[in-house]
Length: 226
Image 1 (cartoon, rainbow, N blue to C red):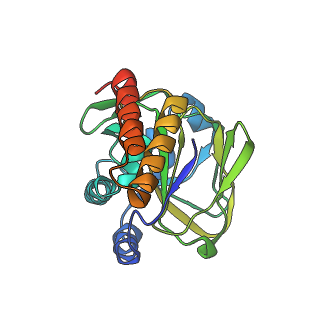
Image 2: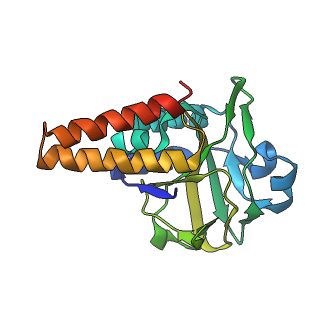
């Protein structure tokens, strides 16, 4: 499932992030790459143990905790501490699949990567290129979102970032270990939850709504790894 989560950060928050990030020290993005990614990756990154990465990452995790849409789609068990990257001057990231397990070196946190996330921190008009291309069952999906919006997609997906030919593409990226490992099961639960939300507005307390809510929780009970 490929899903846009709008306005994870407000415009003011994005502006505050950019002030801190623009004055921070950037390093080679391959500092956190595996063998496969290192062959394709050309970008810059904030050091994952830098104070900027820690504090801005904590702010993103707090924002995610206030997003019912994120919780419904991801059913998060663990969230990898957000990382930050920048592409400019022709930088790109070729075709790759994210590693199945990520280890956060500063904390020792280890997660299974079920869902990948990119939170855009530069408006699309600020740079040319830099589209995130994700391959799924319906072909190649092109993603270039407003600053503050986030895209979620299965970590099993082949994906890439096209070369940035003008300006700078700035984003946060991270992974989620879900309580429900299987993407198809998560998509079904998400569709059911959205239907429950709509029915709650149209006819709260109806027997059909109670029944559907029970089915949702029984499927979650069957599939979840809390």
